[in-house]
Length: 269
Image (cartoon, rainbow, N blue to C red):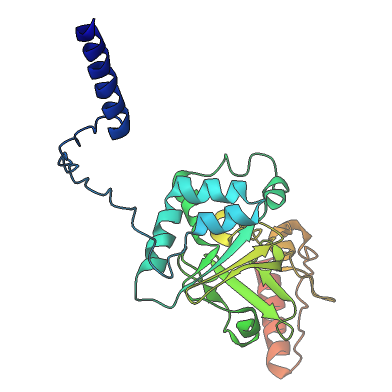
């Protein structure tokens, strides 16, 4: 009995001691060394456009209503040529006259389709000047202006521009007369103007001058034309031939001759 009591007391003592000490401490986990992530190679960003870079089709697309002209610029390769000229360090810049879609619609039916590829190229080049001309300087230019289409000689690709104090600019090609309606873009190397009509050059759309009419024969008053004299029949000439008058000469010698003649006749009888 006593042994049982001692066992109970021992168990209680152990239980009291364990509760006083609290829960057994958990041994801390061994620190883990983090595995370094593999370095990632950054993707290079797309190069930013160089300062001053200008795209002619971008300027026109932003302005709107120039779809036909943009299509011609691209199909003829003139858009690439212009961009290359603008991005080069040399040159005096460019001036572009851009006709609207309505201006192309106003052309006679089939005008563009009747042009060859070289003529379409020349037509687009005719809208480009090799110098950037601000609106205020049009009244100081010397006509005719030379475009990138070629010669400014009469009958070729001359372009005449007149201005009234920079307020209104008129353009004449010899075939059509147009006006500058708006300034679409102005920069150091490029000026783009909206024009009211498609600029048709003489070399492509010029009407040849009519041949001069033959001169009418001039009639001189009071004189018969030479042809009339030549055609007159010879019968019209005077045919009244009168016998030449007989000249009777009187004198002593003649009387003697008459007497001798009469004597010879009498002697023969």
